[in-house]
Length: 344
Ligand code: AMP
Ligand code: MG
Image (cartoon, rainbow, N blue to C red; front, top):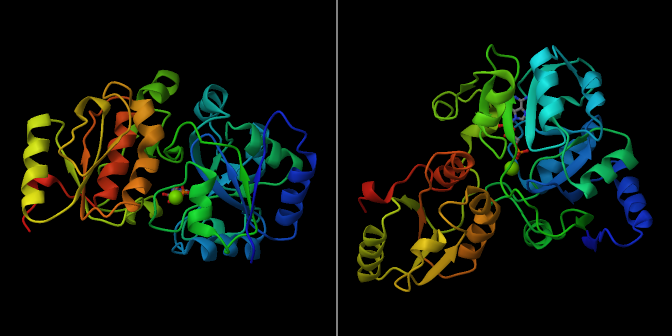
């Protein structure tokens, strides 16, 4: 299959491009499109055969549920029940935006393979002009995970999608770099109080300001995953990745030790710790700017894949605000490995 990548520049009349994308989706095909978090790979969420193509194109394990994207907040009523007053407050405060809300599912609406193994459905309304225009032109809910091959970092640029899925999908809408850079916060509204299953740009503090205390199961998820996708090692680059404390001296010693073992070292870290000692240093923004670090993280992990690095060191961020989401993705990319615990 030939993959077409088309730029949807806001300054142009793109009527025809959206029409083409809608046609593909209506006929049961998949289309990649930008959201404010990462690029998604979408299919009509009520079409089981179409949804199957998402799993095939990505090589995604079939027990990992997909998020349903809607173009108008009111549509949530069509697919979910148990929409509490708190949920309504959150939708009002954060939709459109990078917050997925998990509800009990209204039976018979969404294709069963969107929500394998669960009785719930995760829904969000993305905050991106291309995604919203596509969803509204289509008039159907779209199931969409990130548009990467399973196990690769999520795509934050259209070319990342092409690198992973060229020849596997018919169309990529190129809307430039995504802003947020990490996947949406997932908040389970079926528990009392609600539970954060995945941290993202909509932080715990922001949520609690609107509805009061929530639980945070992110640390527990590796033990007994309630959010099925959480058990997979996501986001990993090719070379083994270790997280390392944000200490310039320790970083230099680590680099020298590894190089003395004949290893080439790539580092993903903040501007402040940039060092020529590394064979490659990919700077993702100031230590004090978690939003920038989130936005640049996946591109940096992909850049590591383009080097000949034998090992990647990723510098820890502190756990405030969006730093929680950055560290969550780094720990996954590292599969939990800390440089200080390294034994080989
Ligand atoms: P992705 O679309 O790749 O960002 O992954 C979506 C993730 O959201 C899944 O891997 C799950 O962890 C989570 N998720 C989606 N739907 C549900 C649901 N109904 N219940 C719990 N977690 C969900
Ligand atoms: Mg994903």
